[in-house]
Image 1 (tube, rainbow, N blue to C red):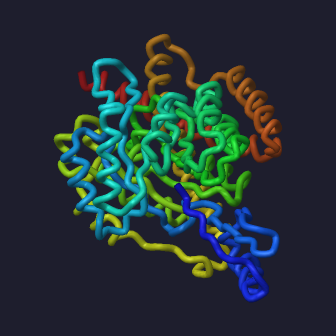
Image 2: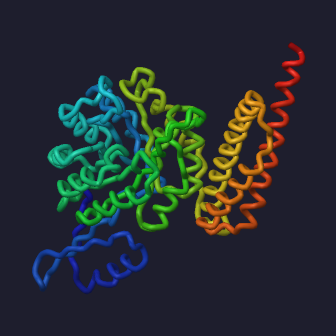
Length: 401
């Protein structure tokens, strides 16, 4: 629960309070008690997820045992971890996998909070789970990617939390849909909740060539930030990476893009974890990862906004190059089919179809016809040359045989 700070309000404190609101903007919620003559003003921070930057949430994918959680609590006591996470209910993609300890694990987290002195965060996927989180005085909950994709489930959770002071983090939906993500955030706001943040955990995509478990698609969290400038945005580097050796890269990219915090899955013995073992690290490894990160401060660049946009452009350019590479691989396959059926490499009708369709697509995206024509002339020329090279190699191989 976010604490309220009570101050006796009189002429002595009036100037101090006015300066506090004007210069810090930190204490924004107010309520008054007492009498008209001697009122007491109660202040509360607007959003606990802005109490530190970067705000670090760490802990195991799943709360597997009481001893495991107590070990994590001791490990984090002196570490710069701001909140401890643990999965109580684990919505798995397929049955037969570990699905969490459920309600029996909730009392463990009370001990974790007492030992570590840090607030606790768990995932909820239903109104019943949200109510249990309130009952056991959990500090914060997150709505997972499999839940945020469903507005009905999000609304049920919002209704269950209405009137409470629960802090809520909303993960992006599994699919890259900015409207669903925005809608989930708005449902929490409409429920009267103020301690809200978003979590970017990447997006599912069937792409065997991708090195990531979930594609970052950085443009989407940047768009969410544009829509809600005051909303803190975290990066769940574990679920984007899917493997330990990518965690530092993703964490640094998130900090370079001025994310407000990180969520990192941390386990006493990751190799023996009952879920997502490949992407978890030990508390010691967490400390090493944090020591290796570079924090960017406003003012280092001429414009932080420009740097953010450039980072997104770099990511998109890498994706464009990757797509062009995959297109050329398909062109090589096409060369084999044409040779098999004794077809010419260049086909006028197909080229005309490409020009008409691609320029039309470009106009829909406010891209000039001249630009699209030049772009696809280059792509088409490279495609023709690739097929010629492929056919020559095949013919040379046949001649050797």
